Each structure stands twice: as structure tokens, then as C-alpha cells.
Length: 514
Image 1 (cartoon, rainbow, N blue to C red):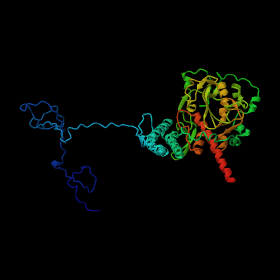
Image 2: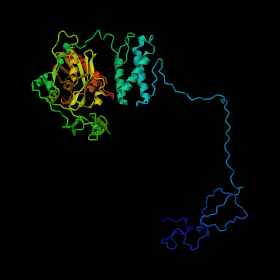
Image 3: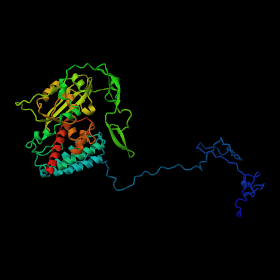
Image 4: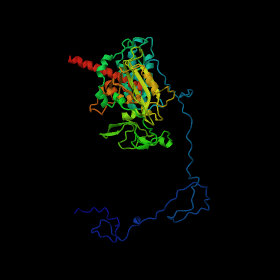
């Protein structure tokens, strides 16, 4: 055992006289020095300024006590600290006292030349830095395109850059959509040749090559005929076929007052022709389809509208709606018709027409509310809103883009008469998933070119590639990126472009084989 250093031998043992340590490091002396005795603690009260006290009548206690004193003493004026004096406020002389400084006012004006300065917008959630970078890149492309006419139109590239960026901004709602559309626009501008004159200008998608009218009808009728969908495949794709007209027609009973499953939330409900406020919010559903995304490094299925997991409560409210898919029931509600025979005297008849229809919900299911038809040169033939045959429940604005039917001129019969000015039984109708459009038009037609058949899904039917996916992968063009619903003219035009790209691809394969 080590020898003790005796550091605590003068310190009284805290356990004395009941200490059991042997030996003990502390002192066991019965007498303690006065300095080791506990002292009485005197608590001092914080003094507050009061009136001066008469020193002659003031008595100071001889023995201090721990109990707080009720009488509060005041320091004498001689001992009181002097009041704090304010710091001198004399301004420091710098030699610039005569000059008055004014705040800088920011001005956002478009430069006459060079990339435009993008102004911040309260309605936009796109970072200003990203918008400025996109505008600078677009300006480089427009500056190259308009270089031959720069001397006569020095500000054209800047003006078109600003208009193009605003067009992209107004057509998108989030950063991802903005970047996608900007990338698609820049890819189109890179392929665009230099301007040949003041007549050869325009924004992307609004510009047409000067010689396009001379080189009209890029797709010939003979080139498109081999790609008509055969009857067995039309039947597999659920197209209405001529044998439907051979069945006896029996009018269908009204659906109002019957129970049907909702097409959105899949719950049974009572069909009404007049909805109250409660009925307008009865359906809770997810408007977008299911998609696959990575969550914490793992692939999960979520809803495309809100990215909530499967089985979660819907993110949107609306009325209950339904649609019929059985062709016989559709025929009983509104009969199908066929296009007229070819009229050699017709001056408006087209060899090829691309269609796109938008549908809304009524008391009889889904009905046509808009039709857009373009020719093979992608020129609009018909673009009209349609009055449904039954009471409207929901215009399906999320997809149709239709907010009102104000100013409608045609019902279904009147619209088909207008359409039959351009198509007959020999006209090739082009579109994407056209069985839905044929059902909405109640039209039976067998000369169909469907992009679903041209570009089948790798997993086969019933899986299908969406028009948006085909446009992105084949044409490198982004469509349906806005929140105002689908643009039926844009969808119809893309179908013509997809057919043209498919024919070119097939021609290249034939040349390689030969």
C-alpha cells in the first residue's frame, strides 16, 4: 500500500464521530478551528433607488441576520453613481455631407439586343435564375437563325426569345415540365435552318417552312394504305364494326334513377339529372393514373397526381360519374352511323384526316363535347365544341380542357354532317386510341390507322403506349405538359407526325434489306 501524503489530515472528517474508516485520511480532532465552523450567511437585498434618508435618525443594526430586512436603505448622494450621459450625436465629418444618397430603383426592361432580362412574376414558381438561363440559351439559337436578317431586324431575336420563354412558362406548372418543354423547344430550334428573309420568321411550333405549301402532302395516300389496321386487330382493340348495325335496334331505358358504379371511385351511386351541393362533392378520387417512382431508393407505385401511395384517400372531389363500354348499350342509347359513300364531285373531301375527340360525363355516360380534325398537312379542317344529347354532369376539364359550352353551334348530328364534308368511306382516319373517338362520334369506320397499332407496347395488349410517351420517345417533343387539359389540335397533329416518322423508318429498313 502506498504511503499517504497527508493532504486531508487537517480537514475535519465529515463522518466524525461515526467514522468507520481505518485509517481515515481526515482529521478526527474533537475541536475545530473557528475558520472551519459554518458561518451565518447573510442575504443582501438588492437596493432600489428611493428618496434620501435622514442620516441622523437612521439606525444600523449591530448584528446582521439572515432574515431579509424590510427597511431598505438608500445610498448617500455622495456614493451614488453618476447618471449615464448620452453619447455625443455630433455627425462625423467625411467631406460628403452636401451629397444626398438616393436608393437605387431596379428597372426590368427588355434589352434591344442580346438575351432579354427576365422579369420576376408572382404567378410563376419557376426560379428566376433557371428562366434566365433558358432564355439565354434560346437567344443563342434565335440569333443564329436570324443572322442573315440581323441588319434589317436587329431586335427580332431578342423579342422572339422573350415571347418563346413566356410561352413555355404559361404552358407549364412545375419546374420539371418547364425544363422538358424548354428542352423540346431548343431541340426544334437547333434543327431549324437559317432564315431566308422577313417572311421566314416565327416562334417554335408557329413557324412553317416557306416551301411547305409547295411540298404539300408529305404522306401520300398510297404510302399510308399498307398501315391500315386489319379487321381482326380492330376487333381486339374494341372498335365498333359494321356487324353492329345488323342487330335490331332497341332504345335503351333512361339511366336516371338507377344504381351504377362510379367510374372514378368505383362506388355505387344513384344517377340523378339534377345535382345538389352535396352531390357535387360526393366523389373523392385520384384524377391521374398510377406511376412508378423511387422512394428511398426503392421503386413504388404511387398516384401520378399527388404521388401518394396506393390505397390513400383521393386528392380531388367531384360528382359521381360513369361510362359504358359495351357497344350494344352505346348503340341503344345513341345509334351508330357510317360515313357517306365517295362523291366524285366533292371539292372538300380529304384522303386522310386525323381526329381527336374530347369527352365529358352526362347522365347517359360519356359523350362528345369537342372534335378537332386536321388534314395530312396538319391544317385544321374542323374544331368545334359539341352540345351533348343528355344532361351534363361533368365536363371533365382536367383532360378535355373544356370549361364551358357557351357559344356551341352543333349537336352530335350537326357536327357529323360537317365532318362528312371532309371524310367518306374511303378516307383514312388517323389517331391514337381511336376506338374511344369512334364511340363518342357513334361512327363505324374500318379504314383506320391507329398509333397504338403502329407502336405497340413491349408487353403487348392490353398495355398501350400513351400519346405523350410516343411523342417524347419518337418525335422528341413534349406534349400535354400544361394544367388546362389536353390540346386536341396538338394531339391530332402529333398523330400525323408519328405516322410520317413510322413510314420513313419503314422505308429506311426496306432500303437496307435491298
